[in-house]
Image (cartoon, rainbow, N blue to C red; front, side):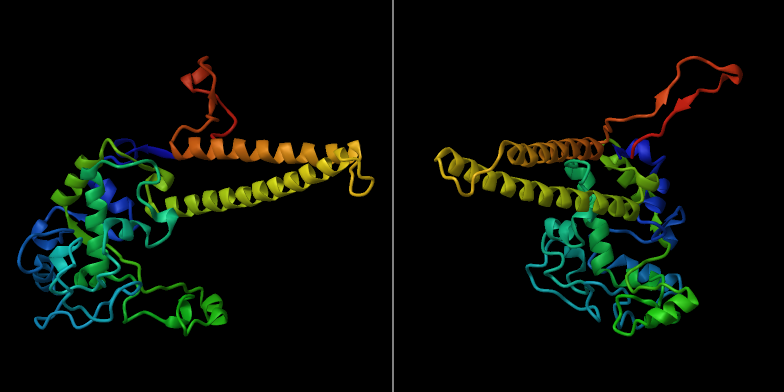
Length: 314
């Protein structure tokens, strides 16, 4: 379901600590917190990491997060403009963050941050900045959830060393891309909330991006299946049209009886109607305007409680 940011999140703290699961922590002591964007000649997050004892004086020798990331940070070319603050020392490849559209689409349609409708430029910019931090900043890797000291590839289903039997026996699930509680400046989180408060976002699990993506993936798969059914129905209808034409030409072979024609037409029309109805329901749900809402009795039963009938349709 889609709702306004100010309906999903209470404030900047709620936004930063909910939207990306446990990746970020709202930090009021800004001397001990990172920013998702900067204009300094040198990355201020590196100095913060050293102050917090997360990074030795020698700096970064590797990019701990691994998905589209490089093995080690380094400079990028002059056309590296979308995430330009990290141009001199980035963990991202230029092609990964070439444009904001490329960043939005890299992880699949279910992770498009504007699934609930176009966002204002001031709001969307914060999503771009967060993407740049995640993809490009070597300091983000210092908060990898399953860092090298605990990571076991036998527990990572995407790793070449994955061992399904071992993973099940030890109930372990790991990855190399997830972050855990990187402290972000409170002022940055508050600014994000202010910029986006009138925009719309997915409200699943209180506005958790990963839960939203899982729901959108189900919706997309259902839509794809309906599309296949419609294409199959249209193919059958085309065949029927050809056979009816043959019957009208007086040919005795290949003609269809009235019963056979009805047997094809009726299910086809039902399938088309079902497809149209499903598309409409999906569209309404994405807009945050579900067709079916919880029915409530306006009468006041004893105790002042409101009676509810049925369930809200998700």
